[in-house]
Length: 525
Image (tube, rainbow, N blue to C red; front, side, top):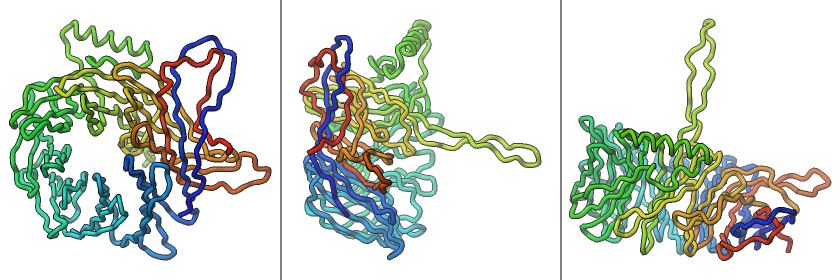
């Protein structure tokens, strides 16, 4: 692995032009450091980055070296917050195993591997502080369709489906035994989430079931040994809960926050919060999207007004609203005084294929999934008493992902929330102070470290909230010579950019008669 071009990056390129006097909040997305790892053209590589907060970042590189071995070569490399190397470990993965899923806790990272068509599994445990590798093997169930993987203490939790029924397996690293959590292997039931309480050793399995024409949302609580402690069922005569996350208050009290629908459909109607006291859920507070102050701000003004007029008319006629939004709800963000929910609104993107002609007749057109298109993100705040307090939204323009994944990242800087998402070689940002937008959407380009190079193409652009005001932007770029007089061979790199969002100048006016084009470009040194 070759590491090159680690340097401090300059930012603003100011282009003076004559303009009318105007006021605009100043903000900066600075490229503090950039790490570039060369990619060999003869190898097939995959890259992942895990945020370790103030302890740095973990980079995982998988290489297929078929010319030398059938095994896959893995490299684990830790970097500090200045993107300087701390340690590196290598591992040759037995070709019989395939990676299934990864999980990160506070001190360790875990990978689950399976040997196809057998019940043999392997767990790789990486110490994030020292870089030590440990391995655990066990026999689970063959051909389990794994959807979630987490680790609690010395036990792995594997949730998925076996013969079209939900199942949660608990595997002990200590004695290599595996047990199935009771009360879950039923028809017409789906696993919504696995919530673990590391401090108390509690496992909460949240399920969604369809029974006798009704939808039931339940929380199955188990102790560390897998014994069922209690079942909490939530139901409403009109609304159905789609997702839920638990916010524990003490041993007997918690909040459940998520989104809901009308009837048993996947389409969200709004958000809810409910208080669970001594296993008994209180009446949920349902917050319809139309009741949110800024939910429709992603629309253009005229379209937004038409939508609000139509909703107001339906309300005056006593008709209920029906929305068809799909939500990808992030993990809740908890601070001392509030609980923040972030969710992205998306819809499946389909493409049609032309049918072949058979005997002069054409078959029916077929459609196939072609990724997911995002429209906007919503941010909602609840106080510690479970009351909805504020909301805001962030428009997402022309963003399609082939995997359904969290694209919008949020970090808190002072009294502001910075929202950002990647798109090809750019980062789009917006800054809010709860229900108010203080810096409107801006676009920042990611540029090479050297002024003599230009980006020829971008691939797999990703973004992660890191710590404080910092983000990690990473992906693959092909770089070419900007001023070459002869044909030069482009180079391909895996890059990691440390980005810092400066909020100190928010609210200050830019100099009259100046405009700025913002790029995260390299400066000469």
